[in-house]
Length: 260
Image (cartoon, rainbow, N blue to C red; front, side, top):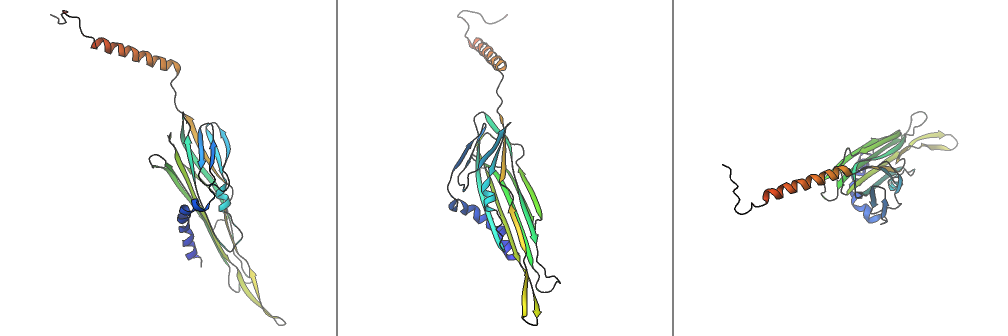
């Protein structure tokens, strides 16, 4: 019953990724932490910094949950696409990131008390996808995906980049959709006084992002030589330069440089 619509839902996210920047409010968000900067180019509601401790900065991505929200309808197809620009500050590098969230679902199919009449139907699908890409080279740093069908309860997902050694800027993209469709069960009873009467038992297909996405970026300071190691290096370079100069110095005129 819902197969055709489901295929449309699966492909809709690709179109949304292209059109979202045009239709979303062009509000720029810029957040500075102790070791990196975070920027977005279009935000209907500003993303926020949750914490910045011990080389881990966590950001709340609120627009995803605003868009992937169930609205108590028989049919819905919600989509979201967002891009987040991350750049390490001078003297730091990004060593990895995680992007996590949860879908919550509840599937209920209406039925008549005795199983007569037309049965109800319901189905739901959720999908989330994330990717990181180096700004300068365009190289892909990490990607991951999550999908759930007819979810009952909570489905957690986490996209982890693995170990990175990123001093340049990179973009983290997240795309997702939540689709659901439901139809009621319908049956008929007959009353001698009033005639036939239709009855309904409604179905529901809840699928939505539970809370704002959380993006945590991990950083560490670049290695800086210890003062004594730096001094020893300079001393060694000076001695080496002196040896090279002595070897290149020409011999005085008349001096016999050969050995019998």
